[in-house]
Amino acid sequence: MTTETLSAPLVVEFPFTRSLGPVQSAFLTGLRERTVLGVRATDGTVLVPPVEYDPATAEELRELVQVAETGTVTTWAWNPHPTAKHPLDRPFAWVLVRLDGAGSSLLHVLDAPSAAAVSTGMRVRVRWAAERTGAITDIACFEPYDGAPGDVPRDHSGDFADAVSLVTLPARLDYTYSPGRAQTAHLQALGERRIVGERCPECHKVYVPPRGACPTCGVPTGERVEVGPKGTITTYCVVNIKAKGLDIEVPYVYAHIALDGAGLALHGRVAGIPYDQVRMGMRVEPVWKEGQRWPDHYRPTGEPDADYDTYKELV
Image (cartoon, rainbow, N blue to C red; front, side):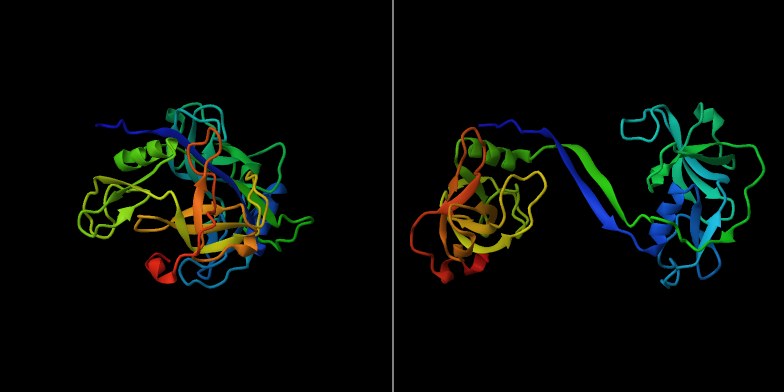
């Protein structure tokens, strides 16, 4: 029987917070103060945006240099259809701009009326954002400029009051995911509270979730095999850091569970038992919540622990 392959939109999104070293801290704080800083490389080239290590020699770089707000477009690409996440809500050009006094180019956007108004070699200047927080978006965009070049580069201490030391960057990926024939059958079986894998015709391992091909033998898999639902904990970890948006109290246990009849272990949360009583070899079974298409967690079955020799190849 032919099964229609599933597909669905998927969004992976999370905030990424990182600390800044002295160079990046000075650069972002400088943008907040309408000051563009670069760093002098070992060959004397001023790099904007600044880097912490020389790209040619890998030496640490700390000599900060202020460059002009004006510069020259070195290359560009027109974007006729901006999205909600883009810096401008109208068509614009992506540009690489070599600011006056710099020896490298900065990627940003150029506010221009049309693609015909953009050219390599055109002169531009920074348009500062009205509200600045210490981010690359403090440069709202570049705009065409026909005035005199900016000041020559000059050394800068990098000292600012209330310097930016941390940044939180939103990471987001939108795409349509299609699990393929094998995983479609697996997902549909989960909706029926069954766990289905596929057996390799050569090594005879049963892969759960199935992948459509054996990663060891490199041959297609087609024979569907129902496994479990019970299984054995082969190894586990105790999670002590609460994940944002996940309504699970810490500490909790996340384990590798070898389902009966499967040729490798899968991931699952273990509940229904104190975290410090979970152990290798413990026998567990899946628990489905009402209306949920996949196991919410695994709980102890009360059976005797499995002998290590029965699951040692799956640890």
